[in-house]
Image (tube, rainbow, N blue to C red; front, side):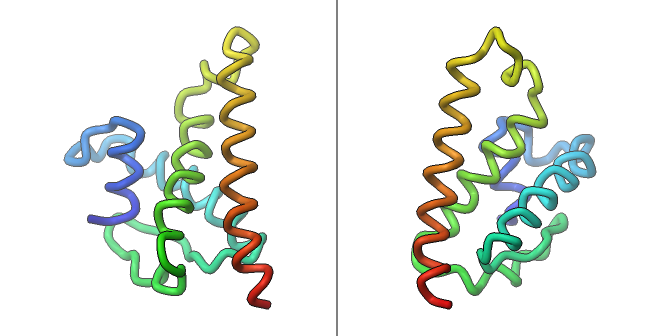
Length: 111
């Protein structure tokens, strides 16, 4: 499975359905750029190429994937980001902050 397929599973998009791939890749690669700017060793993804993620340590793939899932979810389902969903918005922001801190502690320490 690819990173894109894993994201599609988390977003509950049928892995076989490709209609949202271009949009999802734009969102995911935007989030990946943010992670890269914060020192996390990830590279842009495509529909199949994930070899560039080999520099992640231990279980960090799941942490990066969880962060990317929330990042993409915010953009993919914009209704979650309205004031009517303030609790969800706060939870997503808090969870993303916790996940990025988990990664930064590890990768900032290694520099």
